[in-house]
Image 1 (cartoon, rainbow, N blue to C red):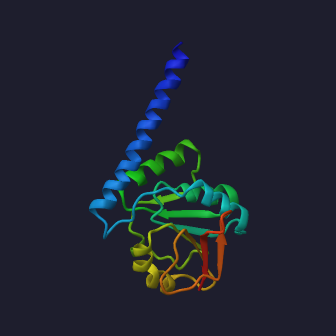
Image 2 (tube, rainbow, N blue to C red):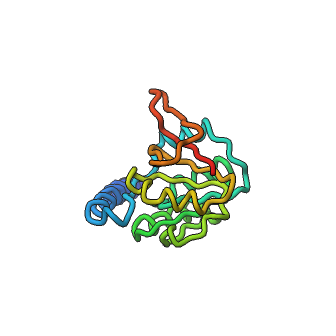
Image 3 (cartoon, helix red, strand yellow):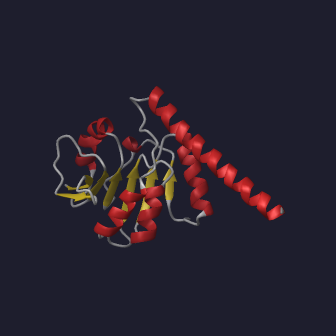
Length: 183
């Protein structure tokens, strides 16, 4: 009886927390559209697609720009063994990601509460972005100017406006889903 109540309480807390996470992301996006990326975790179908098609080298460094709660970082760490850093400027996704990293035991992932535009991205082998087209356009010149030669950009769902991907990974419905770029 007590175990059932504990399980139901935990389930209820999870549902409430997840609902608040989505509401928070929508509110921030609606009211601060020009300065922040909307907080939407990578979809599982995109994660599966990257798992099937990407061949990343273990031990290399990856940065996730506007990483939210770090879901993609945890995927890249677990699947490919890359060293991942993530930049998130919003409080809630950053805090939630820190908690998840502790609970799920990802002590090596660095989730930084900073604006990545002020960071040095030159030292990374892989750059992951999951941003809307307007944010992609806003950061395109900065990324391609400051990334290391030979670095790989993995863009989830959206393309850059000027640069053309060298490879496009399509989903099961042949819809372009993952765009790969090199400097």
